[in-house]
Amino acid sequence: MPRKILVVEDNDMNMQLVEFLLEEGGYDIVKAASGEEALAITREGETAPDLILMDIHLPGMDGLSVVREMKTNERTRRIPILALTAHAMRGDKDRFLEAGCDGYISKPIDVKTFISSIEQYLA
Image (tube, rainbow, N blue to C red; front, side, top):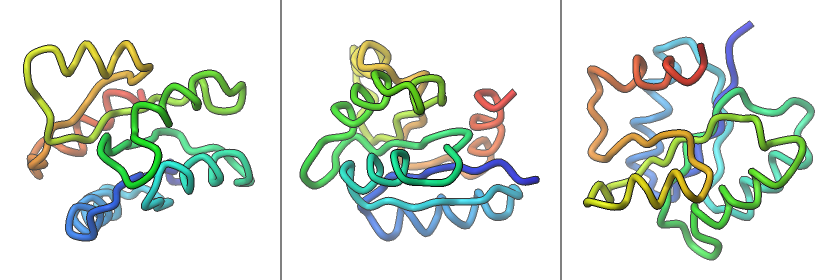
């Protein structure tokens, strides 16, 4: 049974690229374009995702706020969450980890290493 990944991304082009790479990698994808939508999906979905890819800059509720909320919820707190962000400045990684992210993948996405980066967190 394929692993399920929730992708939270508001940029259509980024979402299309991530979706293509994950489908090629054999994963099931659930998409959300906002933090609020991601929270609704994880609360109401039949099965929780195996991994969450979280954009940090989202309309409405930002990605780090969503991560903090997910890490306090019994249903989602053990799911690995990777920040998916163009922000890779000094100190950003620590900020992401403090908010509850388990790691991060920087944009632009390196298509050659994207799947192997994700697989580290699904092992």
